Each structure stands twice: as structure tokens, then as C-alpha cells.
Image 1 (cartoon, rainbow, N blue to C red):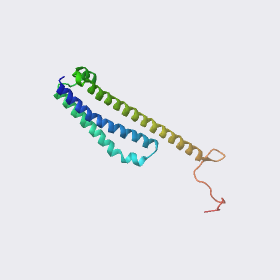
Image 2: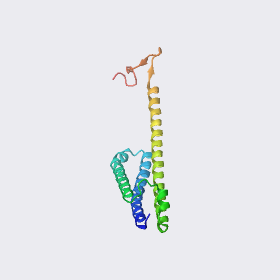
Image 3: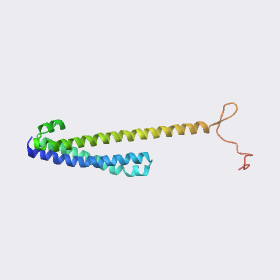
Amino acid sequence: MTVGTAKQVIAFMEKYNAHFEALSAFVSEKRAKVIADELSWLLDSLTAEQKFVMEGNDLEAKRLALFKNLGLAGKKARELIEECPEELKSKLTLECTAMEKYVETIKATNADIIDIIERKLSVQEKLINRTHSTASTYTGKGVKVTKHNTSGGFFGEV
């Protein structure tokens, strides 16, 4: 890999990392909003989330095209670092390590969000089931009452 090629790869990785840094911050905020049950924020954030997805897809397509044009198609980060000129190796390593960290953080945060939502839904399901079972009324013969007799109650007939 030439110095010019390495500089192009590093410049692109810097842009890619800026995207992942912003996405990581967004996902962290989303996690906080899920915990706080801020459903309106979550609904309003769908457009922003879709924008991140589209930007990520666009950047990945550009990375693939750049790597193909530079003769680096199919290369893994480890291979790029090994082939990088010595004077730029630490910079490329830093960018690759940062991207790996962002991706791991985003994946872990998204998994945490899913876990939190599943636990909240499980609690809601238990509450709903408990409410239904305690609200049922039966006669002395075990027949479920569907209409309550309100005559003569506290207010009399209504």
C-alpha cells in the first residue's frame, strides 16, 4: 500500500467514524428514552434513525467503491494495517480501533434496548393477565358473571 492510498483510506475512515460516533450517541440517547418510557420521543426519532441507516448504507457503498478502486477490495482492517506504510500505521490502527469500538458499543446498546423493552413488555403482560384474572366474578356455582347487578347498591338503582 502506498502512502497516498493509506491517506485516502484514513481520510475515509475518519468520515466513517464521525458517522458511527453520532450514531453511538443517538443510540445511547434512545436507550435513556426507552428506560424513561418517553414514547413520543421514540416515535419522533424514527426519522432521525432512518437517516442514520441511510447514511450508513451510503458510506458503506462508498467504502466498497473506494476500496475496489484502490485495489483493496475484500481486505480486512487487520490486513490494511499490516500493509500500511510505517509512518501511517498508527493513525490507521487508531481509526480502525475506534470504528470497532463504536460498532461494539452500538451493538451492545441495541441489545440492551431490546432486553429492556422485552422486560417492560413482560411486566405489562403480567399486569394485564393479573388484572383480567382478578376482575372476573363468578357465582356460587362457578358460572362467570358478565353483568353486575347494581340494584340496591350504594346509590340505589341508577
